[in-house]
Image (cartoon, rainbow, N blue to C red):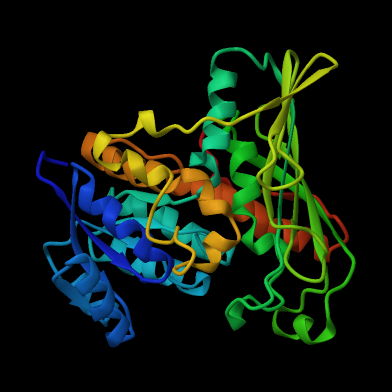
Length: 371
């Protein structure tokens, strides 16, 4: 894109409100418009942040020729349709996870980006968290040596969340654990095999037909001797909230803390040591660096469920915004782009299919792979 500021529209103002001040302060962005079906909430947020252009109708917003890109933060069932509408309207897309709920929807988004030349980025928080950036830095410096294995988990209790979450297959929302095991070695999933375990309450099973309390997937990485393992649970499993990943290298290994707010562990040979994860605000423009540690939902009397469970997403939000905007500005692909986002998302979709088939090996579709 040219040197003019990029006009951003944010769609969905629950979790989405967190991003408004980041875009307002980023030197490449103009926080141009917001969209929310509830008119009272729309004006409440618009007034609070001084955003003048406001829409209750997404289709009307997409007709606005001044909008360059949309950032979608709506319920997961709307992601694919809204992303496709935006691409077809000539807008770049950043979308919260997951990319879509079916393999076919992922395929359509990839094809639309290739047809239009527009940019799509799935805003996966874990791969821009301070923990991931810390391990990535170790890896790039050669401190881990050769990566030998990767493991990740995302466990939480979804009771009390909006009704569309009830009974959701665990692997249908697996990007927070799939993302880091693919992003660190800059790899793609070639095929998956997944097993379900346990059983959730009968009233939860009805909605999606998914009985499992926990799903555990093995991922074979394409053109690599590596495999990874990811675990996901949503209901009826006693566990403190945890988004985690472990990396085992030939020189050093990193293991995420078992208990939130405790220190993670680095193993050097057989010698373990605790490590305090540093912040990575220094990688950002000065104007948005403070958002790695404070934002809209960081006060006790104003918290969003994704922050209460999730520890503020590891300071990732300004890093996500910066990656999206700089990719547009530099006319390059962001990470993850449409194909990479589809690969990450389809791992979870196909993992659940595998679990329902007793662990059958299922290959990732070709459209999610880069040669």
